[in-house]
Length: 374
Ligand SMILES: Cc1cc2nc3c(=O)[nH]c(=O)nc-3n(C[C@H](O)[C@H](O)[C@H](O)COP(=O)(O)OP(=O)(O)OC[C@H]3O[C@@H](n4cnc5c(N)ncnc54)[C@H](O)[C@@H]3O)c2cc1C
Image 1 (cartoon, helix red, strand yellow):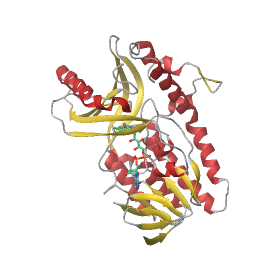
Image 2 (cartoon, rainbow, N blue to C red; image 1 turned 90 degrees about the vertical axis):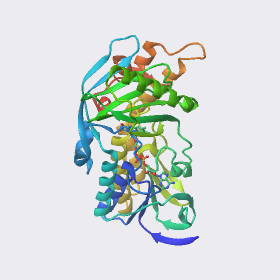
Image 3 (cartoon, helix red, strand yellow; image 1 turned 180 degrees about the vertical axis):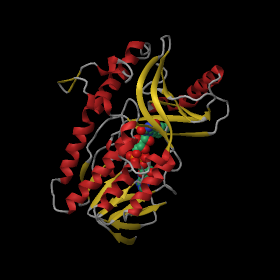
Image 4 (cartoon, rainbow, N blue to C red; image 1 turned 45 degrees about the horizontal axis):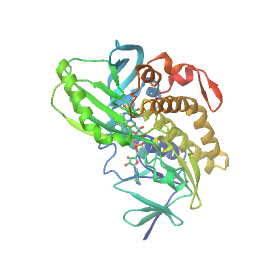
């Protein structure tokens, strides 16, 4: 093994969470090394690229990455009239440009970043890369996505996941809504059409056991949309990936004598119902970077404060999403498919989703703060 650089902070993963963490920590004066196994920032894109409006003020790089506004959500449930949610605002972005802009901002702030750098293990010597090099720092931020190695290192366990498949196709008419398709066939997930100028992303997610059905289900949805004349047959891009659906989990801990903070998907911050995780990745990454700065300044509570703050900000909305999804998943059995009322309870467009429910013995009422989150 080759001994390598020492720094104040090593960030593993340079997606929205890791780049935001590196930016915040470097801006606070820390020596930061950011690592990512991808060959370049943001590529390949594994995302439907919808960001809710409130992120606009928070993230550097977002204005240049915006491709079209979204103003509504249309939810389709077989046998029912579409449910139209007005004033559901957000932006369709170029995710590669967004991730690249965040990394550039981190570099401009003084962070060192390395792509093609895959982390293999955390050992007493430090962060070990696939090439044998070792990097060391007293604090590590795990922004390494749904199957986080740093999460495993602090004993957070594997996360529950949804598997997805998405194609990009020509869109024949401009559209300013995110279209959602609910069906008992999409067990554990849903299907979507998100417009992005002259193209649309059509995709769907299901529980991992049904992964083998993704291709056929997506082909059927694509064919149905072609038949309506809304989209073309041509498939311009194919992607997919895992989305965490277990909700907030243990997000701080020690491993091999180093403090570890998890952010973004690694911390389970993606909404288990909608799959939205860009905004929470940016926000949590920035908070983790700021916590590391405070820790370096001698604020020994900074790490535990980070965990408490994440829970304050995201805890209620994630707990509701986990509860709704768990309830929906419990409904269908081998002979009984989810009924429309179950699907309505499990999707954010319907009042049933926001109705009071009891989580851990506490009655949760809808709050505006909760609903403003993705
Ligand atoms: C098909 C799909 C569609 C989606 N659509 C949306 C959407 O429309 N809107 C939305 O808000 N969210 C969406 N999401 C979720 C969103 O993409 C994630 O929540 C978001 O990317 C989380 O950011 P992150 O920085 O935490 O993780 P990531 O973006 O996953 O970044 C993690 C990084 O860590 C790197 N990494 C992992 N392990 C290692 C290692 N051992 N060594 C070095 N590097 C490592 C990876 O290469 C990666 O670059 C979608 C997800 C999928 C799969």
